[in-house]
Length: 183
Image (cartoon, rainbow, N blue to C red; front, side):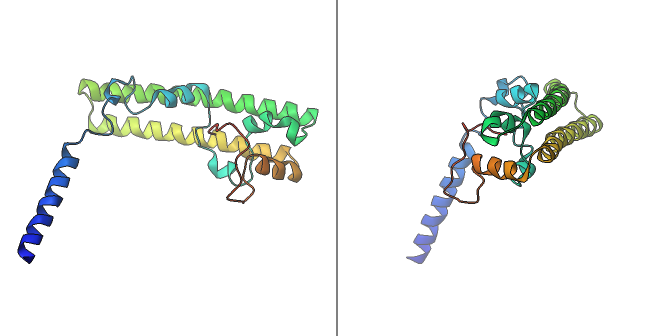
């Protein structure tokens, strides 16, 4: 009886393993992408200079983002100098982010094409992935630096209001006061 139970369990585990092995990859359908490693949304975000969650270390630790400060300017009571400085900070950040995003896309495309053509080798793989990593680091630093500078432009009360309005009040039941926009 024990032997029959062990055999039955073994067959069930084997069948489950075979089913999982035969299941299509979660990547199925992505082989038609222009850059296989990036979704259409990621490509658009890089082109537009969007934050893509790169500045969460700042955002979630009371370092407001200029894009969201601009959206909440009335609620935060920004004065004219703060508004002008925030707009300038946003414009500079977005310009730099678009430039870096474009460079990342260029390197990702070269990497993708090298794999597609079968011309990739260890040296070019290392060079391309290192360059992409450096650019991604610079892009993240660009977004985080904007959060750092933004905090300097606001009063402590405005930062607290920003956190509250964005749903970071520490109450797990609080809901973000935004439209689901990812930073």
